Amino acid sequence: MPFHASCKVDWEVAGQCADVKTKITDQIKALNGPAGCANGGEKCLYSLVSDSGMKVTATHETPKKHYKDDLTFSFTQSSNVCKVHGFSTSETWYAVLDHSTNYCNLRNLITGSGLQSTANFKETTSDSVCTQYSSADCSKY
Image (tube, rainbow, N blue to C red; front, top):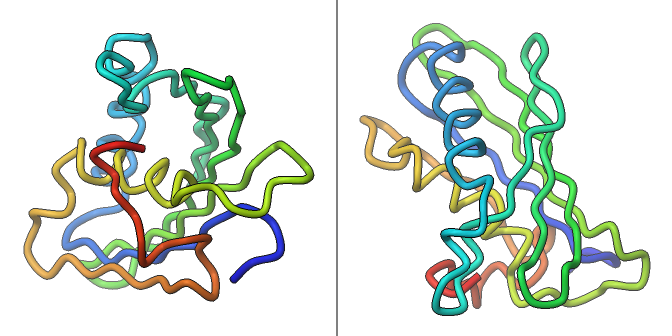
């Protein structure tokens, strides 16, 4: 388990990285406001920080305690597969456990953009690089 609340995830998605990147940035923008916070959800309060080259950075704020997490997506084209490296980390220096929030910060964008339903979609992560990954409940966080 990481020493700080954070998560590293690698995905492989069929297609061009430009399209994958657009879908992720569009999803960040779609979840910008408070609407997804209803009924205790956290699919809300995302903010796009930068979108340049093969990298996207964003933040996610938890609606109840207003903790902020920093998100980074890096894209690498490999033939007809886009390799995406996602990283989310808590801005709170003392955060160790996060109820899988950092994983869900990333996964909710992938799921919301429909990328997990593309052909040959592959996700790679583990508890050793992603805080509380094996107990993730992204319907809640």
